[in-house]
Amino acid sequence: MSCKNNKEKKTGDSPAAETGDTSRPGSFAGDLRFLQQKDSGLLVLSLPENKEAQVILSPKYQAKVFTSTADGPSGRSFGWVNYKAFSGPADPHMNAYGGENRIWLGPEGGKFSLFFQPGARMDFEHWKTPEDFDTAPWKVVTAAAGTATLSRQMELENYAGTHLKLSVDRTVRILSAVEMTEQTGMDFTGKLSEVKAVAYTTENKLTNTGDKAWDEKTGMPCIWILDMFTPSPETVIVVPFKQTPAADFNQVATADYFGQIGPDRLKHNDHVLYLKADGKSRGKLGVRPTKAKQWIGSYGADTKVLTLLHFDLDSTARYLNQQWNTDKPPFIGDAVNAYNDGPLEDGSQMGPFYEMESVSPAAFLTPGASMLHRQSVYHFTGSRSALNAIAEKLLGVSLKDIENAFK
Image 1: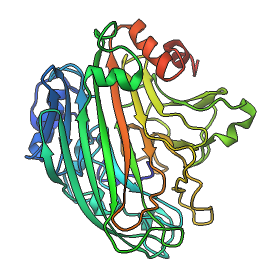
Image 2: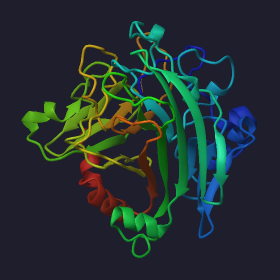
Image 3: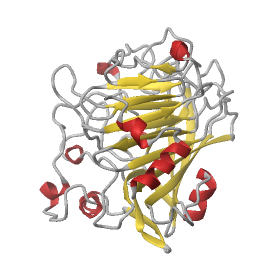
């Protein structure tokens, strides 16, 4: 996340304040009713064998998964929805509608940026999110009970002046218990079947529809998946990485996207880092592809919600630098990121929210060629022992480790 706030679009009220919905604030039913009023083509995905697990997908709002639930309409709404962003004039820089899984194309900064015009200074005044993944509607290609595919044809110009013609196809599919078991290696058809869970995967396909190859001279895009969630005082983001001596942490992570994150908010040992996700201090970090693992997650000791992301990763590929800096080499980017929102210098704030993100390698594509980036999202609630087993298996830490990270 690299955006600043439009002062006229501050933190929104609950859906009840906008719609008169009397359901519990933060409930799935409240968010669903609010979003149905904004997008008449809204899609709600679920599987016949588990109708309590539901996912809201919006064609009008750039194929976003806005939110999901593991417990039916009255259950908790896991995604962050910025209610105020849906009214008033469009923001000239970015329209932060929210959503727990959205697709952008990168890089954001650097020599091949898609967010700055050629020659423009890389500052907030000149930063603009392309409308294809900011405000434009997407086309529904297919839609069934538990899956849907949406697409968008795009023409973009990067900072190097290259005209990029491309298409993006995005499939969102709810995972069955069997598929969850296959991806995680944990038995969600047996002893963990009592855990309340919703899980889905997004398959994001980028195709070069132009007549020129994308190479080191022209530059190229990458697929960027960003997931926004509601913070809480005791929520912590957990980012596992390949074991590295603590003294060599500078080889693992970039922790100064928006200024160096302080030790009171960022902790690490030789295989995992912890970032506070309380929405009270703005900071972003990233882990390099050679050090990253395929899981990232968060847990709230106060909310009792365990959220996990699994994503495609190629440790040998080149990833695009996304920082607002044209002096750095273009292929030194991170593969996974975490962001905690907080007030800006003027006291305004877009959220609060926190974010977990994954990125594809640079798309070195010839005309007609495609690349695919997949990311799955899991939300779990249930017994502490069950959640602890999941965290230990997939994140390599216990709930107690997470709870004690900043104590």
